[in-house]
Image 1 (cartoon, rainbow, N blue to C red):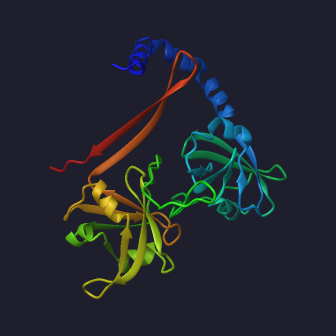
Image 2: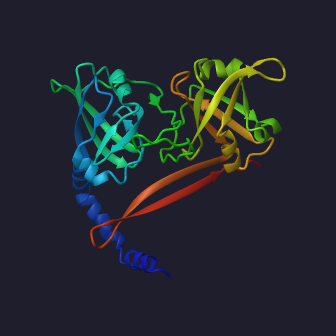
Amino acid sequence: MSTTSHSFINCSTLIDVGSVQDIDKSHGSCVHDMVNSINTYHMECDPYNVLGRLPQCFVWEFGDLIDTHVILQDPNSNELEVRILKKGSEMYFEQGWMVLRDFYNLWFGAWLKFRYVNPRLLVISLTSRWGIEVPYPLHDPPFKHMLATFGIQPKIDQSTVAGVSSNPIVPTRSFTRSYFKKLTSYDVESGILILPWYGFGEFAFAFTFSHIVLVDHMGCRYPCSLEFSVDDDGELACKVSGYWMEFCKKHHLIQGNRIRFAVNEPALNYVMYVCVYPQLGIETTLSYPLSDGSYLPLYVSQQYFVASS
């Protein structure tokens, strides 16, 4: 047994569950507010600057933890994805940053307050230059804007080939349009997924699209190419290629598997959610306090399967 594992087990055996619960009841809210305050930062929103400079204290404390792409979530659960640019000892919001200005109408500038939740999620609130809280749009379901990360590299003057990336955010369950398909041998063997235009593609995509991102039940993203053509029956169809083949390999897809494709903002944000029935996955990150005051991250992954009789 390794030293790390042995130390972890010793710490676990010393936990007095009853005492911990008593402390939580009397002091939990106070500790929660204090932690939230420590993890909260402020920055300027310049409506005419394509970069948003993150506070240096945030860079010192979370620069090594934050992901290259993060979700900004407002009080109404609207979510905007932005790319993090690292330049020397400084960090910036880059791609997707200007969407914030357009979505909240920040044409005169504003102050952004954000709280670190996990490497992929920052909870935000906005205040105008006159000290008035900015109204947050109401959408049902909440607005989601995700980036298509093709060839994106978080460092300047470097390039890379786009690949599969992991996103710990569980995708939304509210969709405005979905399509259920039984995969054919062509879908899984050719590396090209065929989806119908009429009844689905016409609502989910726009003819200006050439790329989309597939998001699976665990939040992993697969950048793909999108073409509009005709199928074997002469009907207008949408052909998805690129990392679709990687998706098939990872999920061990074969002919006859049932797949649900869905979008939550038709013809808007290049993202399509994919659910391979009957599986559902949940990832959770927990923090375990150690005796020296530090925290040990615990990663819990759960898989659920629906059994039909």
